[in-house]
Length: 409
Image (cartoon, rainbow, N blue to C red; front, side):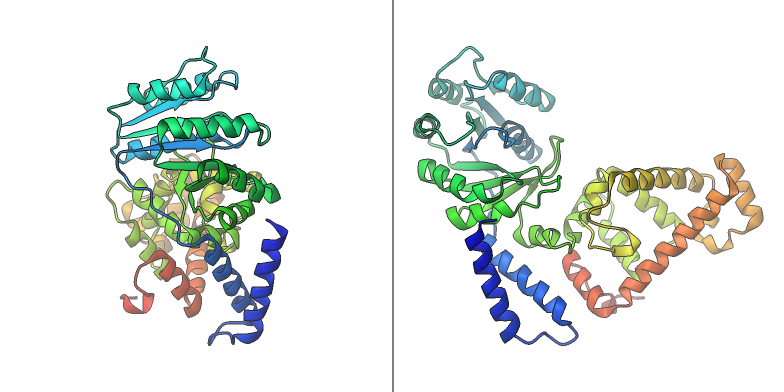
């Protein structure tokens, strides 16, 4: 982050921490973290919805920021919402830029206009606009540079004049750091940036540069890239982003991923059961099945608050992730050898039943006992969490479902 921005935030946090009294039941530490959260959200503003209508989007950024991949991800985002998308490969300088975009677009069955032999990006854009005249959304992938050279600025201005884009998105790597401010300012001065997309947030970088970029351009972050796959693009919402940044998790996004994976099922009901602690092995099996459809486990862990439900949460290393994934797979095999009665009444699973289940699953008896132990620990962990009224209310607020006190326990 920009040093001046850090100093400004620090002074405001110090002022508020000394002047404001912690709300009832909140410790001084929690109070300060909450102030930091509010101040960072204030910098990022409210975010902005990109309308699902006919419009032209121009992508700008330096080399190595993930611009071409993000162009394809954005195309997928609009296509998934029922819009007809067309892409223009206007990067005539980088070798194989056209081929890269074409390969990505072919996976989505989205047409790309480009000419790998062309040397005039503006001409490619003009022809591409005619080629995609029937598209709802046209996305232009422009050339990048290693630095903000004058010829890049000139070409961007000429493309913007030719295409008259409704949106100009600056694509920026999460690890860009203190250069984010100057870069964002230069692009903003050239083409009047309307939105920022932060890429590679699945790595160790937390995207502090996003705060600098937004504070300089006043253009909101509109999307974030959270992985290598084409669907790994999320609509940006400041409260959720800052919550993850501070290790508070993002349970609302987790619930939305669950809703998508359940094919019409009720993920909210799953959340209610987990929060009440009254879930059976049958419920746990359904949740594991849902979890396997929601994406890589390490990404899901980043949506959980630190220590939630006994999980390590954010920062879970690859070895731990692999071990957890293998253990969950084995648990699913074991549960497939159990009767419905046993799944609904796990406390009735004693020695004779354990022997039969182990034989049916082709595992040792100790592994069946490990499943039962995991179930008991999970139930106790969630019950312990929900017995803390302040924490429970905080989680239920994130999930946007009624407090447990209002439900039948």
